[in-house]
Image 1: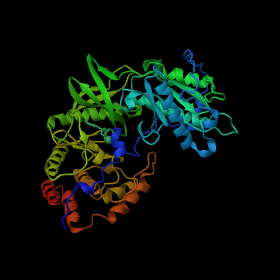
Image 2 (image 1 turned 135 degrees about the vertical axis):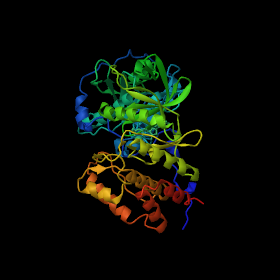
Image 3 (image 1 turned 45 degrees about the horizontal axis):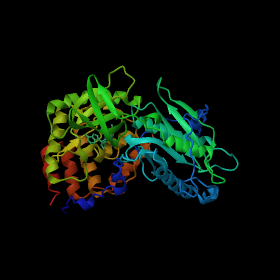
Image 4 (image 1 turned 45 degrees about the vertical axis):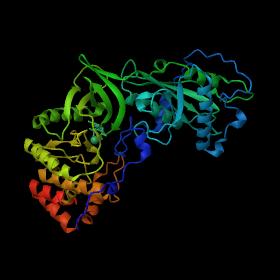
Amino acid sequence: MKRSFTEEMIKVIDDRFKKINIDVSNFGWFSCPATHTATEKGRLVKDELKFPFILKSITLRKNSRIGLFKKNTIPTSQRGEKFIQEYFIKECDAITRAFDEIHYNVLDVHKFPLLDTRKPDFVIVSKQDPLDPLNVVAVGEIRVITAKHGMFSNADIGHATSFGEKLLQLQPRRPFVYVVLTNCRVLMLIFIDRSGNSNLKYQRTPLAKLESDNGSAAVGWKQFVTLLSQDPETLGWVPSTLHHEDKEIKLVRSIGTGRTSVVYEGMYDNNKVAVKMLKDTKFIEQFRWEDYIMEKLANLNSQNLLSMELSHLDTNDDGPKFIVLSPLCKRFKTWRKEDISPIIDTLRKVHELGFIHRDFRKWNLLRDQDENIRIVDWGFSVEVNKPVLFAGSLETLPNEVLQDIIDGKKIKYTKEIELISMVRSIYLMVFRPPLERIPFGDDDIKEWAKVYKEFWEGHSQSSIWSKILDAAKQADYDGLKSLLMNLFL
Ligand SMILES: Nc1ncnc2c1ncn2[C@@H]1O[C@H](COP(=O)(O)OP(=O)(O)O)[C@@H](O)[C@H]1O
Ligand SMILES: [Mg+2]
């Protein structure tokens, strides 16, 4: 039976996420900034900070709607965080509208993974700026306080702190960040500073009262309004530009996060580029390897690969490490008949050059302005036929290789393995069968190999898919091309 790859067959990504330009295709592979639990992290944040700004003196006009957090209007903690959250945002709207010196909006983002996978409850963003992680000036979290403690728990503090840390990661040049932690009745500012050395420094202000008993402004309220009246720079925000030797790259917006990197749209030399920035120094070797491979691949002059404009990895500065890639691409959504032949040719050339990509999947494919597919992310690539431990895509490996993983053996990545992986990933992209993804941090690769092996034993068994897989097994590039193209009407 012939099948066509129609748009409908590929479920498009939730609109909500598209709006804020976050790549949600690689859920489950994001890294956490640290291995601490929230509670452990909360314990780190113990040094006291005096409220860092001079309190604004504010004369309140009677009956004006300025978001005073009046005691009897605040939802009780029994009603749950959702109500408190909505109330908080409403009061903030009133505040940000009431004062000319406040140039920010306080936005409810608790539903979006705005900061990589992280969802702080609210962010403070300049009124004229679009909602993008690069534009977030400060973050905040709403938590209830249980009567027993009378204070935010270490877990709450740690949780809020991790949003600040994430922001520091996503805004590579900013020196520090403030996080607001509140239950609408009291608030605390958490200060995370990375200037000086590479270790973060944490401080927090004592709880200050936000709610108003009698219609007059409480200290915490004044602090909050004062905070909102500060310049972005005073709050640690900096415009995002990167430098390499005498060259400048301007970061325009965030476009994606992968396993090892945060990726931005950038402007370099009057061209739109992608800037792939290291998330964590522990991935530096993978980045260096990608850098090395990209240089080799440049010889192929392929329309299906990216070119590396520059690499800022082996430098002594303690600033962000990054590579600049072009062209800037769009998301890859669906396969087209005309994609098949060039992609297989490109894989053939890469294999002839002696490398295997190893991570051929949807989110490592992009489409450029001329509609070419670009295969990105060469960080997991290996030399052909060299026995190595497993890394890269697991779910699309041939059954024999999954068995080797179950048996704890090394894998010799051959061109046949890559072609089968490609076929299987096309199968997954087209039919979207329910297939569990490995949750981040789950190291039990053997168990997952069993799950996937079982999956494939029950899928792609029709005669046409068996033929396609056979062609892949024979490394019959041309046969594979025509069989795959035949899938299209
Ligand atoms: N040239 C580019 N144009 C547009 N987006 C890109 C580009 N390169 C990477 N991205 C986006 O960044 C994401 C992560 O990039 P990738 O190279 O896969 O990094 P990682 O090694 O962290 O997985 C991609 O899935 C894609 O959404
Ligand atoms: Mg990737």
